[in-house]
Length: 469
Image (cartoon, rainbow, N blue to C red):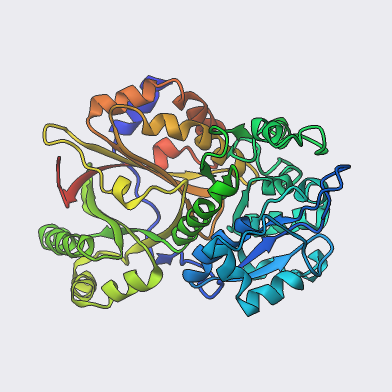
């Protein structure tokens, strides 16, 4: 099988269907609302001790997210005034929240679950406090809200005991939300340390592991936050601010614009168009809002060129496109292209940072770039994502891999594209023989509409920016 793949890779590649094709982003840039979930339960089991939502686990994420321009609404299982715990106004952030008339009113008049429209929110955050252990897990209405927000490309976050709200959240495919994801929460050791391990209805860490979570934790009261596939979780009150910051980072990634553009250039115009594309890339990389920009030509068809770019926001890319260098490229394209450019709007799965995108090969490397378009059979796309999710960390840690990314075409959930940059052909051959690649190849050979190694594979030669370590 491996020899067949290698042989196929080396033959001439079929180019994607010609003609104008724009797959435009459908981001809800006007949506700036986040839903915070707080408990309605006010007693710690049979102890008689009062509890409620933990103030800092609301206030600290609230400060981070409202400072970034997001509006927050509150919902609780029963609605109305939410009981509060950890009432420490010596914490300036807690005091800032408590003294804010608008949000004080909201926390004292929380929505009921049936009053919430999930489509209005880009994220949902479950604040902790021991009360959550009694009224979050079995609230099906709240679970359905979380599922809808998540499956509409939103963020789900929780801190401390807040992940109690995640233990029974199921996705439309029947799997638990936390299944297979890195998750963090109040640990069993921390529950023992506060002497409530016999009072709570279940141990949160154990229940999450039972649901398939890949549980991560640090020592008692240490800040620990993990983000995995748009789910952000924090261990304890000390992690509350970091959870807010991680949610904000995830939200910023949702605003990212990622594009792949294919150009079919007329014979004799290749060098002129390559020069213009190099100029475009060079100036794009100098823009503050640019994450990455690269230009390639097909290894076996130098009249086919590719531009790959990512921007922090739609406005950043649009501004550059409407500027001097964008207009220059557009003007030349009118006379240099043999067919209209084909643009693919994509959404990165498990996104990379700007620093990661700008990693380069070494001077002595014989870099090889592989791009693979995949058409998954309808109904198998989640299996495809799960297969890659398992393999991705291993692929990225291979010694010969510079960058590895899987992206989904925005308007077609069955279509994907990989971006695979290797230091050399030998590194690529190592990848083909790497055991974690086997389930991926098996999927591609059995669950694809067309064999991607024949029709979707593109071996590319970089010509801009050509930087090396």
